[in-house]
Length: 298
Ligand SMILES: C[S@@+](CC[C@H](N)C(=O)[O-])C[C@H]1O[C@@H](n2cnc3c(N)ncnc32)[C@H](O)[C@@H]1O
Image (cartoon, rainbow, N blue to C red; front, side, top):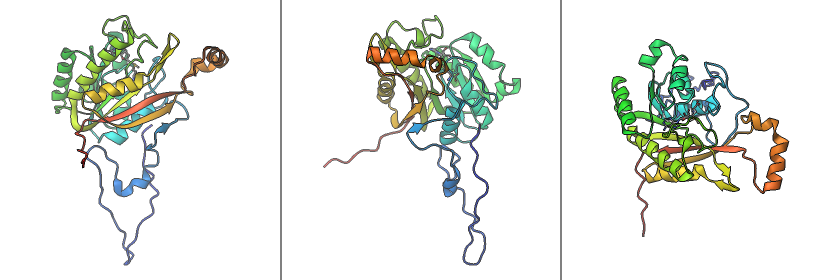
């Protein structure tokens, strides 16, 4: 659901009892009026995110195992884009980012490896939207061919770069999305997953406008009796590419993990017996494509 400003604003009056109208003050990367910043109560600025339940309104549905909850897209789009900006999602899946971009009058380019998902998601948008507002590309986001295709779509949309990058990759092999060799959920090892992830992130870096933001949504995994910090490993690779980390947000996933909810006792027993802890969180990491300010040293 779009975030809306509170409208019952208190009028400010000056000494002559005339209403003071403050000019709108925004950053170059969003439409938040900083002169009225107290009105944006719904925009989250903390590092702990929890949502009551999944938004299933305004075109959203829980129709794909592994789709993220739309409220994440809402927060990202409101915070890091302006109206008409283009958000590039290199793991488009069921199109959550595209649906919310449309709801919030932003535009979107989505890349998805599975042709059947591209066909399915395309039905969620009108023919006009698919030409003007939401471009969906079938392809491998790690490849040069796909990068060129995105550049061509950007050109058609009147831009050279996207204004927000969203990366919601498979969490290694936790959910297997396909048997394709290019699929990040189908890697022979976690090291290979990191390599492919970095290739996708590099394309994203090149396609993103300077000084704009990127969001990485990812969870960690537990396998073969050990913990894999997928989130922090991918964060390191983002930084190696030149991204600057702006925030590491921890999101409560317990409300979303329906299947595990039913088997809560079984998981608790397994955790007690196996010495591990049950996942209750994933990460939303925020990056900026910007130059780090030089720190003066004595
Ligand atoms: C976690 S899901 C993304 C879900 C999406 N955020 C949503 O809300 O529906 C990851 C997606 O990445 C796709 N994928 C995996 N490897 C890919 C690749 N190399 N290029 C493009 N898409 C890929 C999978 O098919 C899957 O649909």
